[in-house]
Amino acid sequence: MIARFDYDACEHVQRFFPERCAVLGKQATMEWVRGGLNRARGYGFESQYDLLRYLNLLFHFGEGFELSPAHEWGLPFLEGERPARVRMDLLMEEAYRRLYPPDPPAQDAAAPRQFDGLVWDASGVDADYAPTSIRPEILPLPPPPKPGSLCVEPEVVDGWR
Image 1 (cartoon, rainbow, N blue to C red):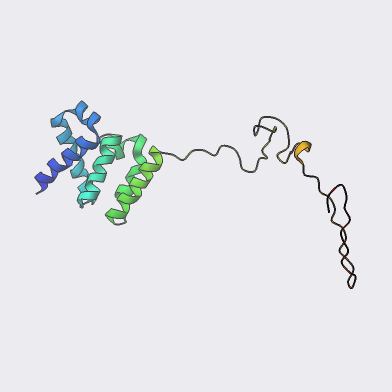
Image 2: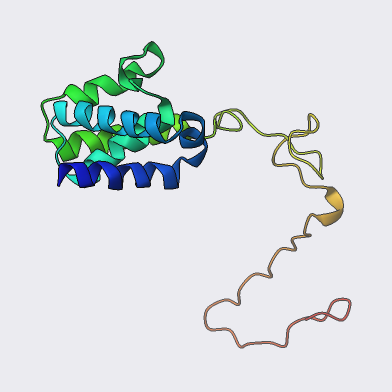
């Protein structure tokens, strides 16, 4: 059964890492798979799912990736005290963060933004700037009628009531 899984795992990496497998060739690919599966089992991974995820990391980052200085961040996840599935989940999350880091913020949120009327941050105009031609004209409301007075027809000014 283990030998059959070796071949299934080899097919898996050939499907998802065809360039690397083409460079390695069939024999070396199988050697990487068998060596990787042995190392993964040495870290306590037993499920096919976790073993294949370890191979994904191996074929992406390179053979013995967790021992290289460039990828030593992976070793604490592999040798930790937590259950194997949890360690592999955390390792995969960390690998994903390292492969696809979040975009840095475009600008410090505390810094005020500037608006030139067309484009933000293009000139020294304040962020609350609004051209006077589009400022609404606010007219005061007439005072309300006094209590007990009769409603009177509102005064007409310039055609407006």
